[in-house]
Image (cartoon, rainbow, N blue to C red):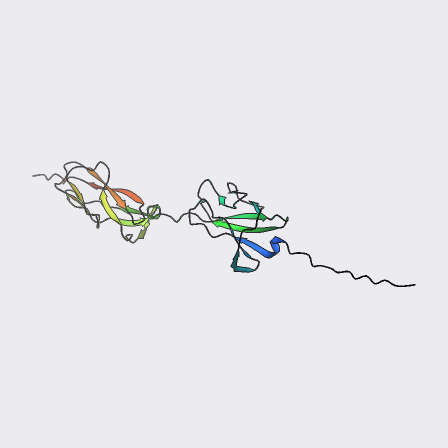
Amino acid sequence: GSVDEVSVVFSPAEATTAETVEPKYDAPAEGATESGAPKFHEQGKPDNGVATPGGVRFELGDGAPAGAKVNPDTGVVSFDQPVDKETTVPVKAVYQDGSSDSTNVVFKPAAKKTAEQVEPKYGVPAAGAKTSGEPTFHAQGNEDDVKQKPAGVLFGKGENVPDGVTVDSESGVVTLDNPVTETTTVPVKVTYEDGSVDEVSVVFSPAEATTA
């Protein structure tokens, strides 16, 4: 009998979208509550950007932290409140062909303001004195941990300052026009370069009465 030969051609399966592209988030600013939309690049080539694949949808990945949300259309990840510690949010990108990629976006807490890191303190002026010394600075909540005076700090009168008081804006030295006749608290406002503020007081006392 005769023999028929049949050629069978095997075509390689088309690569899935997940095999050709990868998503990546830029790091949000410290203290941010929202990421940008992820950007896409060629698989394994982060410098070769590509358009966002049509029809891609986004969802939170396994183990996403409480409070995280992702916009299913844009991939923007958000929190209602800034995070208080470095927080990684896994995100899954699901493509039209059913393939998917996983990526992460990392949120970081806002950098601490100077007023959250240091505290000013005045020494007690001598009885009858009309001037204070310069304030010193220490770590927040720990007077034993002395800190350098922060650069760019400015001093001014606090709220309800008594009359006849001058505060040197650069040194923080408080001067009275006249010695006090009773114990007097002078509030001082301390403003740091980053805009954060501390309030501190210096207490003046009257000269001790001399006995003849």
